[in-house]
Image (cartoon, rainbow, N blue to C red; front, side, top):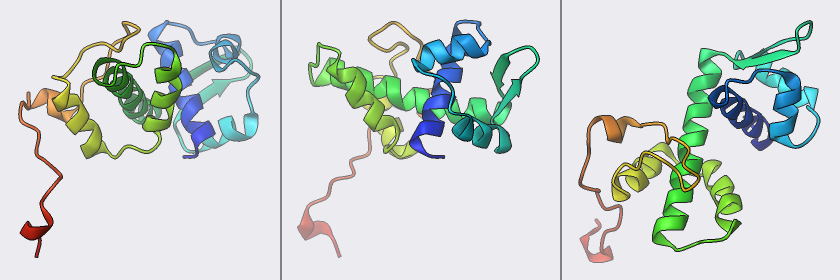
Amino acid sequence: MNTAQDEYLEALWYLQEQNKDSVADFETVLDCSIDYYNFDSIVSAGMAVLNRETGKVALTQRGLDHARGLVRKHRLAERLLYDVLGFRNEQFESEACTFEHVLAPHVVDGICTLLGHPRECPHGLPIPEGPCCLRNERVLQSAVAHLSELE
């Protein structure tokens, strides 16, 4: 998936949270008209469905799974930027958006564990649980080693 497609999946997740499913609502969340090239690629990948007759859009299970990971990364990045780094203006929102496209799953789990498995982002929205939450991990394995310890 490219960044635009990821943004579409994330926007569809937000719609689902709000119990909305219309193309008009989707475009409101996106703050622009749908680029059907990107949207059709999501549909072709089996991640979303669009009923052109009713104007309804929805994520498939595959799309839900992918969007869940994106939203988890974004909201945990917001918590990290807000709680640990002290970002208090809306700059943390755009920075978190960058994080969601580059963080590997094990890094996300590390951030989640470091933060104590937060339940909500700074905006009060739920953070989807990850495998580290389900295992109730409390100790973060360090990815840092002294050069003298390496082979």
